[in-house]
Image (cartoon, rainbow, N blue to C red; front, top):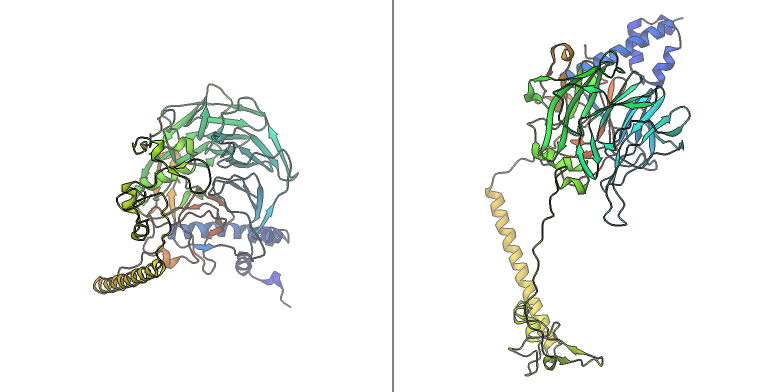
Amino acid sequence: MACVDDLPEEILEYILCLISPYNDLRNCRQVCQRWYTCCQGVVEKRKSRFFSALRAGCVEWFSPVYPSHIIPISRRYSHSACVHESSMYVFGGCTSTNTTFNDLWRFDLGLHEWTRLLTTGTYPSPKAYASMVTWNNCLVLFGGWTHPSLYPLHQQWVLFSELHVYDILGNRWTQLYYPGSPPPTAGHSASVHGSVMVVFGGLQKQEGTSASTNDVFCLDLVRQCWFKPVVSDPMPKPRYGHSQIKLNEKHILILAGCGGSNKLYNDIWLLTLPDNIYDPSAKWQWEQISVEESEFMPSQMWYNPACKVGNSIVVLSTCGSNSNYAGGNMSQLLVPGSVRRQPANVWVPPAQQPEVQPHEHPPPDRHQLEPNVNGQRGFLRPGLRAVDQAESSSDESDDINPQGAPGGPGVPGRGRPRPSIRPNASSDRERRLQVLSRMKERLRELSRHQQGEQSAAAPVKPVPARSTVIPHMLDIGHVITTKRAKWWPVNQGGILSTSSGTPPQPSLLYSLVLGRGHLVMFGGIPHDPTGGQGQETVSNSVIFVSAPSSSFITA
């Protein structure tokens, strides 16, 4: 009698490719040695298939749909996200009204389920634009920004230099105080190399002023101290909203970023760590990378997270030339209102609004004031002037008292005309309203007729297609040795026909992490560089980008 053990390895690997690459595949590894070997082959095949799908521009877009009675995580952008084992952790972020969060969520990548973690310990402050990395079964959270409350008025926005560590196994937050901490920072990037977390750039606030920075700070998680290494020149310009890619334990890649108003960067820099990072005399080397095939560069790189897949970096963006104007508008999302209106460290006086001068009329004499006929004390000032009276309606003009008293013809009327005392005033008003209604209806019919003739004569304009994102790939296979990177051509013509699922709209300030054989995109605020974006609506959707499940693509 045949059993599963009699199946060829090719058939067994094909079956294992159809299950979840997380808990299910991990359980299958524990069956026997043969299954363990097949599972290892499935993992490598998934990576190869996904990389080939990205290169060919043939990917599958999938977003889980939840029942109406299940409320997933709230909408947000500028949050912090990272992957640990089979879960994606999301902290904080803010809404379209700049309301920040300090909640922590876990998303099961295998079951597609959200769980809000009710943690213990010292909670971080509600904030966005913070960095979060994984180290030794812990989440390390640093920095961030929050918008002040509405009351009291004229409060300043807040940057944080808080350092919190979340113990995944113990479900507990711990705030740490280490010497040598950087200034309050937001919009920076971080990566872990061994037991050292390297932080670069960001927006800092020092001595009452705010500015972007290009400083490098390091946190030794074992020795429990901060230190600032010595770096070489030239170095990247100060920036925030960039991407930091860990190539290996000794090399870091910095992509794009924003230095402030009208300072948008598309350059790429390589940071080489010394062999002994604790040597105070050892320099960390900065080198700018030469980019080839820049015409295939994404239209939006700033505030657009990048993720390393194999020997390439993936950026999800639209096709087309770079839009500096669009990027300049989106640079306001990070910098709070008190800063975004002026360059950093430069005081600009507020624009003076032209004063509205009142009409220069001498104060009326007390004898010219009308007595108050309502039985109260005081006098009534004359009402509308001649200019205001001319702007009043014809009905009000006709209804003014025809006597020679104030308010009659040729005399300025009051602010509110007196009701008419004519016996046929009501019927006259109804007749006039009917005439106006008929004239309005006639004008409307003439307008419809003219629009119909113009639409019949004019050619039919095609409806523009909805702008969607596609994967852009930067080849970094030889970036360490040759200091060169190359953008791969994008399959613009057949991308929509070869992809399965519905690609998302262009977004910024979302999170993009690498899972097991797919990319995971969450949150963000929609933004179309081509100008097709309507009202901004923050997202809470989880989108998987993977190789098509219906076909196998050879690596």
